[in-house]
Image (tube, rainbow, N blue to C red; front, side, top):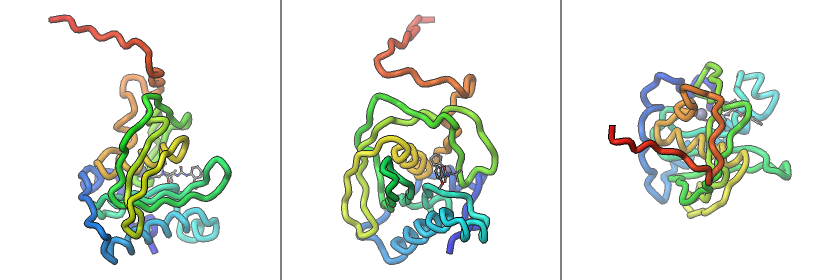
Length: 190
Ligand SMILES: COc1ccccc1NC(=O)N[C@H](C(=O)N(CC(=O)NO)CC1CCCC1)C(C)(C)C
Ligand SMILES: [Zn+2]
């Protein structure tokens, strides 16, 4: 089973690489990896197992975080009806998104980051995604809310992006402008 020891931490070069697409239909090895990743989330959400192995309560994991530079990610969380939602995807991508952005008031953390980083992490409020499920079947879904944020956080890991890369350095708590706001651009020739 995967434990925190299998999760690489910031500073490890794999976290800054762009992960390679997975050949489809997926190999048995890639299917096993995706399953191991989902089981990590299941274990991390079970109080006894999480305590026994000191697992942080995970809602998402991307393959580069276990030093597998492949375009695979898993998510496990509850939706607005408190139903458990599990997504295990190969080659996920955002095919369209809202202009509107959203963010977690409490900011974000990461299984690969052992420190608190303050600040707003702007994310698209609603996204339409395309991916291939554990059996290699194409899926198209629309995500919003926390699910949308988790997906975008995990997709960033496939592109070598950490959540704090998206925090505005000069003003970490700067709230993103709502769409349609006039943004003044100085195109002075200076
Ligand atoms: C069961 O646990 C919960 C229940 C209800 C709300 C939140 C959580 N848990 C989390 O947000 N967990 C975070 C998480 O798994 N991630 C995933 C990650 O690091 N992926 O690479 C960070 C989250 C920040 C925003 C989206 C994912 C950590 C970094 C705090 C472990
Ligand atoms: Zn992360």
